[in-house]
Length: 165
Image (cartoon, rainbow, N blue to C red; front, side):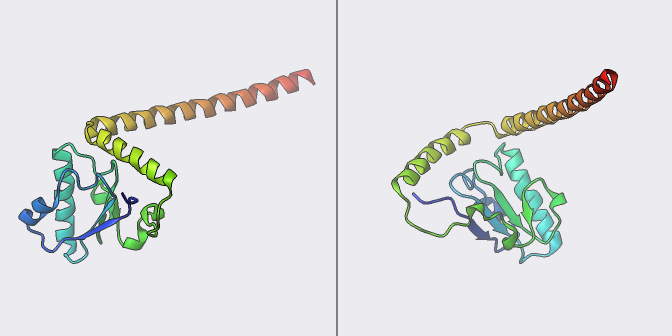
């Protein structure tokens, strides 16, 4: 078993049949994926990004878990919720590992990782994404309330020190 490093795919044509043959539910199950669309025109790139995103959304598959799918395109990242970069050099360095031999501990961790990947594959990606979004919202609310509490605590401290003087 190897470490999860980027798997690069260059689409040859923008036809729907080629795209359907390329997209599989387990495409990002074992490693992060980079889909390069630079050979197409910006309009074709935008259409292909939309088709790829629609495939994942309509099949209720996550393009972020267990490994992300990055799209290399000239378009802005605002056209899609998928991770979009303009150049491969902008990809996160986390998955850019030099090939080397793994020790026993790393091999054991990769085995655990495989079990977690299978478990993630069998979950509802929309429910997971919704849960993560709700958790983030509640966490931001707690942080905001804690900042407010510290602000009021500071005011009370200043008033009590002035009253004692």
